[in-house]
Amino acid sequence: MRCYCILVHGKLNWVAERPAHDEFGAMKPAGFHCHRFVLAPHEAGAVEATFRRVRENLDSQMGWLRDGLVTVELEAEEITPAPIHKLLKPENRGLTFYERE
Image (cartoon, rainbow, N blue to C red; front, side):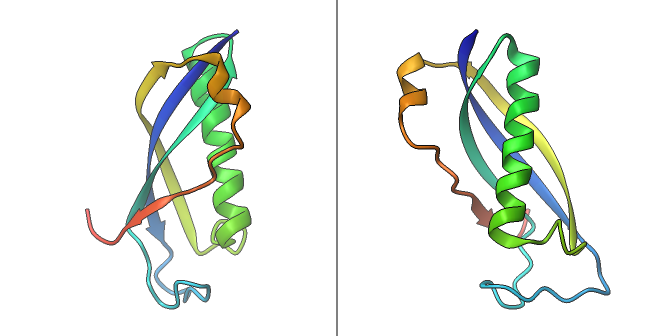
């Protein structure tokens, strides 16, 4: 098992006929960036675990996936081995949204 840092880019595809009602109001971001530290046996496992956590976090914070307002395309932009002590810190659940690509 190894610790990895995964930089994720998420592209949001909004369902046109459904309005978004949340803390962003009517803003519909085009996408987001975030990073996660994960423990996995190999890079592919690290990416899979990261994508699962990002989707769960996005849904718990915003509810867009659960409510059928958006689909998300995730891409691992960077995969780097990281020191194991990075896993001792509380999980960063932040997402940095952007409006246009």
